[in-house]
Length: 270
Image (cartoon, rainbow, N blue to C red; front, side, top):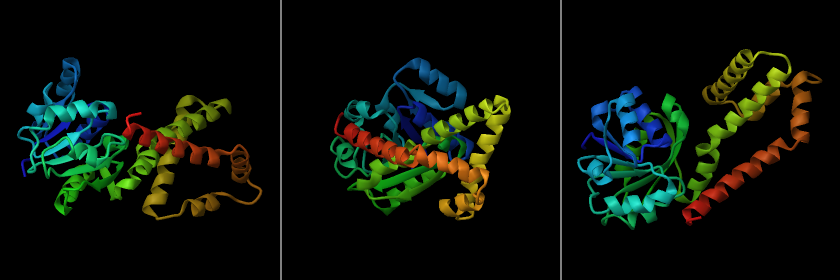
């Protein structure tokens, strides 16, 4: 397999992958080529990561073993028209464009080009990303493994049927924003209680990190961990009661359902 990887549309998501590829050692800068709409953006990427860049998506695809599509959903049709005649079945196309089905991508490419759809999230930048992956009609086990290798360099991935990719987007793809909002709220609460912003931030961020590690590394169920912290008549149960009365649980359910609905609207051109 040709080792060169091209990232088409290196915005925030594409840059997160590039940063992860390099910092993890999965690829050297010279093995990566990135594209963007504006020369100024390409200059930023060159200076920051020492990768090759070009304004031409077709040029980037040529000679690459793995083609990562990282453009916004509304820009993908124009991109596919540009690269459709260049991509071959010897390459693996990995799309991280939110909400875009593999069938849509395949329809714009040559016959039998393997396409894998993935939905990583921004913690990929620090090698702690999470992604769902699903194969298109022409992608086999080897292409899935290749996609998992790409995503494994920046975190973890799980295989799902394509019908569940909108749910993956809503839960995991958008998930960092939910946790950031929670962290912001807790930090502001700490400041309200008299803590400095620096101390409140340290307390909240480390608490979130440690909690995540307990859930992942110890295999604890969230209910088990919550009950471990919650003693009868104590401070935590008083706080949990307020959260439940405020409908926080229902708000999260509604929010994630709204994200999934929007993902489907984007797939339909909304």
